[in-house]
Image: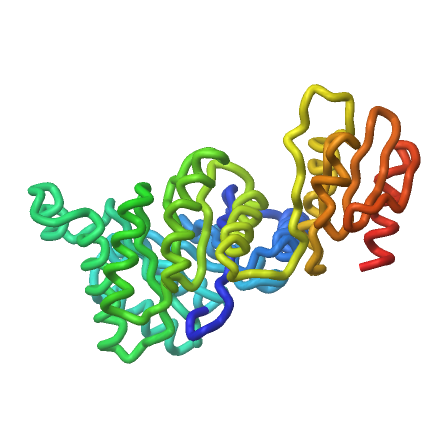
Length: 343
């Protein structure tokens, strides 16, 4: 992360993990593999108690991707996760209790070779910064940046440089401002995200607005799209933001029509059934799923492969040329047979 490496896509697990059984841990491992296959590079877990810390240490042993322990308030949970083999720790120094406790976490991380993410948010600012914001002497973005710089200075003082920084705000404008300010004053890797961005549509719009601006300015080393939705959709949204910014090319690009009143191909059903498979593919191709033969092959003619239809009939086309005709029932099998065989 950082140093010219590719920008990573993160998500955060949505459910508690305390006291999971052996079988439940195995099932969770399978779900993590699915997220990894879909393009998730890093997965974070909330660790609010000792039971969760113990479980995360077990999960980390079977995970195909690095896991991050998200720690608030109790620094001993961070120590437990570090010693238990968790790949990375996220702490908010503002609510961990004291500088001495932060130093203890840094010492353990240095000993075990574990990186740390310094997570700062408006709810845990130092009292002097909070007072200045409340009095109108400082913007929230400047306070977040100042808080992050303070914490980073302590890490530098202790010669611990394996850290990244995140400054989370629920406002896209504030997110952009604090990250720009920090990037002007530090070269520490930055994790980007609009926190609590909202449900799927609102969250994706807000996150896209903020993150594309920053990424195109060369700011940001990893990101998460924080949605009140599934982990998979967070990963898909993150990948697409990187794609439109020209920062991630691998994988299938899907173009699909919204569907209309014509009796045509079931675009929505097809995508619902097969999008996870598309997200798992590393082929650099464009796939078109079009709702009717009126416009399908023509509007999707630039696609490497596409499918469309009319009622019970389906067609498969490549670069606008129809290569298969048949029943809609047989169309899906034929589509993937051609896709797997030709590309």
